[in-house]
Length: 150
Picture 1: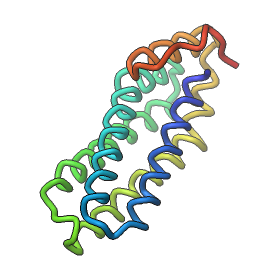
Picture 2 (picture 1 turned 135 degrees about the horizontal axis):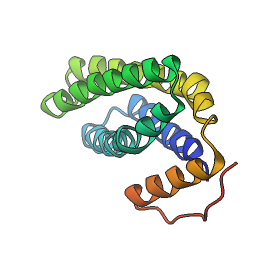
Picture 3 (picture 1 turned 180 degrees about the vertical axis):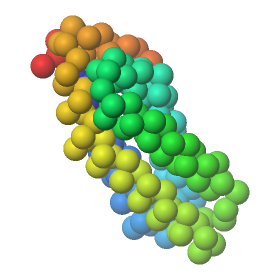
Picture 4 (picture 1 turned 90 degrees about the vertical axis):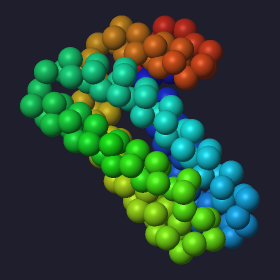
């Protein structure tokens, strides 16, 4: 598995959870879904910040550096919103507003990564991409799929 494929899969999982939380009005279920979103985003940001983004800086281009710096800042804002959400009652209208803002932040971040950043990652050689995939799978507690990357 390529590291970008793993990140894309995680993007789709979080997008699916956002859709589910929008459709449910039941408080306990909304809280459970919020917890899942927070857990998945926490792992995802760790993978990116500790493994993927530092590797992307190896591309040594101004574009890569700018994108990585912006991505760290976007993560920071997402973490701020996630930190506030547990204190907001799921029945409160502010909960829906914060969830909308969080969803939009994440969607913007995902679009930039998938359209631009992941293309830059392809400038890393296949061996380096395979190493990244293994590191990311180990951190996420996933079984490695061998040393293949395309």
